[in-house]
Structures are given as C-alpha cells and as structure tokens.
Length: 298
Image 1 (cartoon, rainbow, N blue to C red):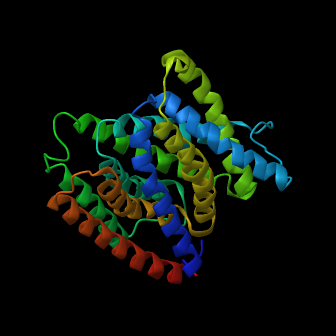
Image 2: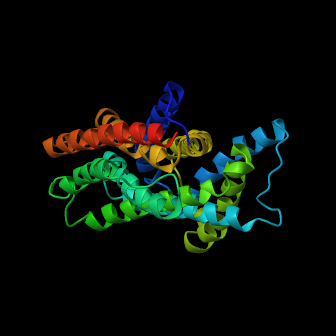
C-alpha cells in the first residue's frame, strides 16, 4: 500500500461527496419504496452501466466461474445487507444523521484490518484518532432532538449496516488482483440475484406506487452512488488500503449534513456541529499517523 498522493486524496473526497449525497436520496426513495425493493432497484440500475463497461472494455466477468463463492459473499456483505439496513434506518431518522452514523466504519474497519491484514496494524495514535472520531458519534446520542426513544433502534440499525461495509472491504481485498471492473460488476450482479427473491417474497413490489421523485433518487443511487462509487472504492482499497479507504466515512457526514440542511430542511443542532468538529479532528490524527507509518514501512 502506498502513501496517499494528491490524486488519492481527490478520489477519497469525491467518494465522500457521492456517498454523502446518497443519504438524502435514500430518504426520498423511502417515501414510496420499501427497503428490499429500494435495494433491488438501486442495484439494478447500478448493474446496467457496470455490465456495459465490461462489455465495452471486453472484460470477462468472473463472478459466475468455478470460483464464484467469494463474489457471492462480497455481494451479500458489501451490498445486500448494508443497503437494506441503511434503508430501514434512514426511513425513520434524518438523512444527515444516517450519514453521520456511517462514521463508525473506521472503528470496525481498523479492528478487522488489524486482525486480518498484515500491513494495516493499529498503532497508538491511529487508535486515538479513530476513537476520537467515534466519540463524536457517541456525543450525538445525548442529543434528544436528533436521537430519542422513537428512533434510537433505527440509528443502531444504521450503525450495523456501516459495519458490514467494513466486513465487505476486508473480503474485497482478497480479490484485489482480479480486476476493478470484474470484481465490482460480479459482486453487484450477485447482490441482484439475492435481492430479487427477497423483494418478491417480502414486499410484493408489483403493488407499489412509487413517485417520480423517489424513482429519480433511486436511479441516482444506482448509477452514481453504487456503480460509479464502488469502482472508486475498489480503486482506493487496492491502492491505499482499507484503513485509508474507511476514512471516507469521516467525509460522508460533512457532506451529509450540508445536503440535509440545505436540501431537506433538516434541523441541525449545536451538538451536531460539535460532533463534526470532533470527527474532523479524528481524521487529521489518523491521516498524520498513516503518513508516518507508510514512511516507516517503506
């Protein structure tokens, strides 16, 4: 894994912007789409550009070869489960809060990376930065305007969804030599296979009456926030490592709060602002420590 260059930081920022914008779109989509169907339609629209890209570049999709199991597992852990959980959570909490809660990803990601990856070990200062960022999330649970007895379960469900992204990230690294487009397309197709029966059995989508607003949001979620974003994420994972990639979770709440405030008229309290300051401080500590660690390793 290399030390982050300007292009790496730009791509991380772009990924944070895209995923930060996804939460208010998820909120809008939940107005007329149920969670399984939302995830299904989102993945369907993600598959279209990905398959076309592979066809155009003549890239072989290996997700259905004799070694199909890792692709299916990643599709389940990296897409199906988190998409459903985050849709369920966002339906009952503010969109920016869902984005902020995604900041728990670096904590679980770093613990998993420490256990399973040789070059992503936890150091004292890295732990300090990650825990400091996570403390900003804890601080939000004391804000009864944002999290209360009516939605605390949905907040926890959203956090659980973010944890599965870390699990999926670890699994994805096992296939890093199999090609960006192949892995992204294969895992997305497998997630579609999982979601079709789940949606048909539990939600009967043919009875739904989705609005145009929700449909536009879900198309954006599929093409941009899933298809394009997963390609960016895979590139960052394979070039810079899991811990660097999970720092995008610190950028997501910043963009999520901005989109929630300006586009969704959601209430932003002083505790939310303080929480973001704590999170940004955690980013800085982790970034400085990672830079020093990469120099020592190289």
